[in-house]
Length: 124
View 1 (tube, rainbow, N blue to C red):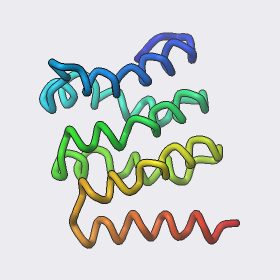
View 2: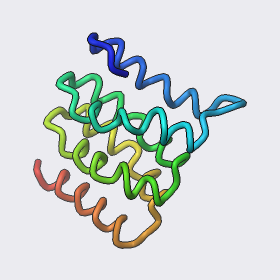
View 3: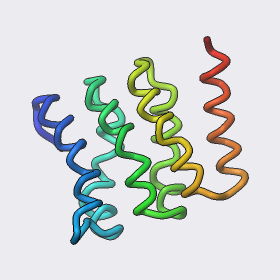
View 4: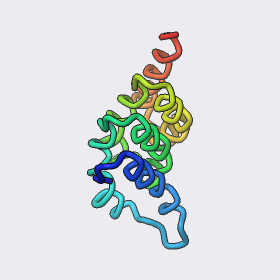
């Protein structure tokens, strides 16, 4: 996830989701310890394809992490990616918005996320 080449970083991010669906999947603890600390730098990555790949895996990762960790560690990243300047990053993030809302299942947080989505719709 820290490789110098954007294509390697992008593919490293994409392999996370299949790893949480293996017969012996990555656990929440493994994700928190090994993967989650890399998400913030990847969310700020200068390469748009890397951010788009990250946006694609955040929903399934949030489901494994659960509400508290998602709220504490991913919510601001989700919000930032929904406001990304590139449409494919926003689209990938929005494709998992329902899953993230389901994981959060807290009215105030879901309302905040839905407000971000509404702002995206109204920007056009």
